[in-house]
Length: 149
Image (cartoon, rainbow, N blue to C red; front, side):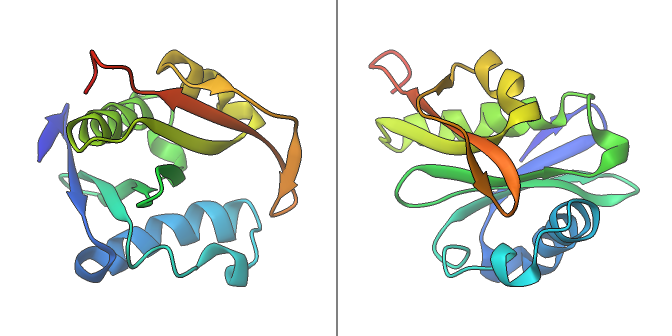
């Protein structure tokens, strides 16, 4: 568990922190962005590694997951905590974990507004725009070179 200001970020499992993880994802994806509930929950949650950011008084404020195939996704930060470095800290922790555990490449599908965030962490756009849950996305990837592993 690492602290970032008054925030703790920890890696977890769906089976352990389902309530915290689903609370953030529900508020961001389903309530705020209008993603259909059937599209939000999938069988990848049970096998993926998850990260949760916890504020000392507000509880869970952000989440992300990394599947066993190296697909980063379900990155969500509650509105009041955006543009405060929380997503960057989540990404740093996930990239470090992936490098330490032998991943060679990470992939993700970024909402267009989030592309600059991912680019700051070394991800590159590698495909055309497409719709996911009715929102435009672009595929991105990060190659974890020898120095990171």
